[in-house]
Image 1 (cartoon, rainbow, N blue to C red):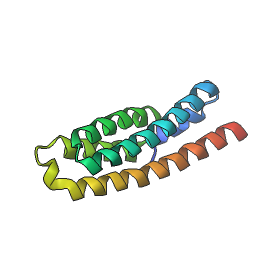
Image 2 (image 1 turned 135 degrees about the horizontal axis):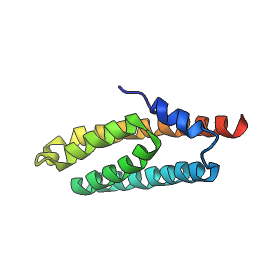
Image 3 (image 1 turned 90 degrees about the horizontal axis):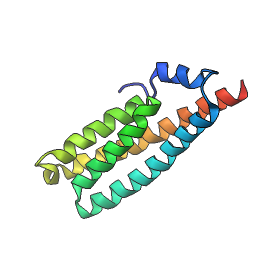
Length: 123
């Protein structure tokens, strides 16, 4: 498994020249989007709308990419691939497990973003 957050991005987010409000807004938007996307992924999973799961994975990947969240990026890409395949219905269990993995990766990402923010604001 890859690292949770890109070390270059972690360093960049700590850079004193970056606008603190912009960083806080980016982190807050990621938190909000991840909660929203994961909730909709589960609803879509329940009704078997795999295309919609893939769309939300792509959206979440865009937000994660801005913050350098490597693990979330990797899992959302896998989820998109699973949902785009013609055999998505046959891979229901694999899709479910991937969404669960994404939730766990997202929790780790939230933790590291929080740690990053605390370091930035308290040093």
